[in-house]
Length: 324
Image (cartoon, rainbow, N blue to C red):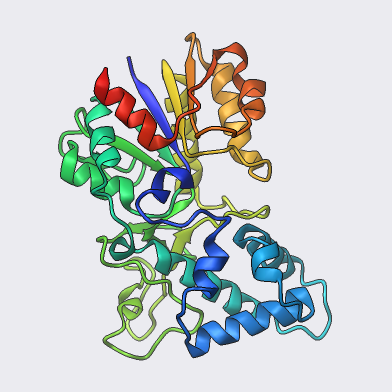
């Protein structure tokens, strides 16, 4: 009986990764003061919030990235430097990704070790997280993993398939040919527009092997689908990845949502789960591991009476599994 585990930011929060709702506070209220960070804060304040001082607490990372995405795409304002919009949007993503780097997260918590033991051969993981918590966890405590459509595993029958539908901090793609590259966990820095001339800079090595020619390198871009209302799924490999995830969901006997709230803004993800539920020929059972007080209404709209809301946090749920 194959299971699919759908992971949201709540899954990685115990490891120290920020929730999208707390990311701005962690970026701007953590005592770090750099020139780039000061410029980013001033730009967002002046450009999006007309100098209001409360925007960090009153808004979210998703809201800001959505607004910058739409402005960059439609170019609605005269006398605006849109290259500057792109630069500061990428700088905000760079700061967010820095919070997710492996040296900022701890996958050694007891609940994660128990979770690795729960996974069985044939189970799959669909995650909307960019961090590497699940990969490091499976590498150390599980039977390994592979990225469907992106990489292979020597023993695919025993290792878990990890679908990273919004990308990952160790993945990059070529904007010309669409090739997606997976790098080691140590390569996670976010390349900003305007490649660095420093040969010791890791980002200088992130060039497409297919498209780069002598004397002309084609820089890779981070394979990150930002949590925004405006998304681009134009990469062929990404479309194949979502289709493969759809098939995997439809064939699952049980689906566990862990730390994932099915946000209203994420229409494509909602449709993914809706299509899979309609395509499935099985009597699927759906379990919510989202803690107490989190509304289950949207999940019940998708799955009806098949939904079982455990009311448990991830740590509580893994502890209950340990006792069984």
